[in-house]
Amino acid sequence: MDNRFPFPLSLQLTLPEDYPINSDFSDVMSSLKKYSCAGVELNIIEPANIVTGELKSYLQSYNLRLTMFATGATAKASGLSLAAEVEEKRALAIEKCLLFIDFAREFEAGIIIGFLKGGTAADKSRARRSFSQSLKSIAPHAEACRVPVLVEATNRYESSVANGLDDTVELLADIESRYLRILPDTFHMNIEESNMFAVLEKYSQYFDSIHFSDNNRFFPGRGAIDFGRIISFLKEINYQGGVGIEGNIKTDLTADIHATMEYLTSL
Image 1 (cartoon, rainbow, N blue to C red):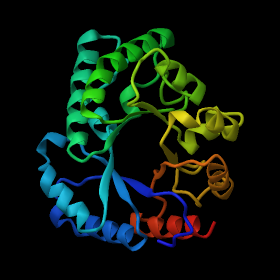
Image 2 (image 1 turned 120 degrees about the horizontal axis):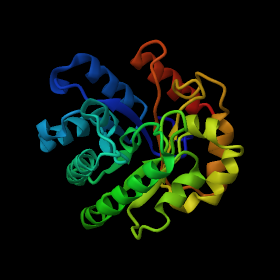
Image 3 (image 1 turned 120 degrees about the vertical axis):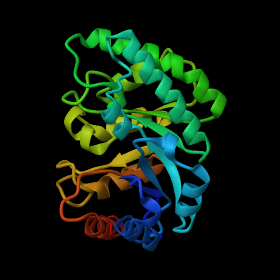
Image 4 (image 1 turned 90 degrees about the horizontal axis):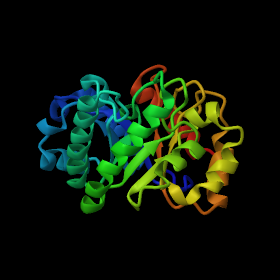
């Protein structure tokens, strides 16, 4: 990729079960290599079925690494929620999350908690308390494994927990762990924040990764968000972290990757 883009770039994808022989996935990996992306954030429904050494070698063959284990696909497939009202369900989500941390440690990667936070709840206060308790259970293992756990700030229509950046930081405030971090996402911020630049600056010490996703949930450049302004702002505040691209597919994945990379490197 043209060196004009100032931050390491990753793309969030779902890993096919047959990834070593999947030609479509190989084409996607080749596109990321072409643009010198740093890595991938992978949704893996059954991480226990993955031979970590084989996946590492596969990614390395495209000059990529696993930067984040995205828990959303597994959470959806298994109905996991760290804010579940039923204690047995919440305990299962915690148990799975500890395994996700173990998996991520093998790659020196982090994990993303987005959908895993749980959906909208009738009792928001109870959901927040349950989620906070879950984080307190997870934090010591994250510390021991040195695996960053990123709590994604998602909009109120998707979850009752950790919506704006204020809310997300507040949830983490009483948990002593340098490995608990927040994950801003421009799509969700466009809904929740009155001034995304102000909150990004206010909480710049709480995040080392940010998701770029356009207002229509497509890749950057397919909607109305001014990513040029966001990039300039991140440079102004001396942001030293990475950028993860996340979004729905508008045409086809390879074409969308090409379009968003050309857009981002032109800014």
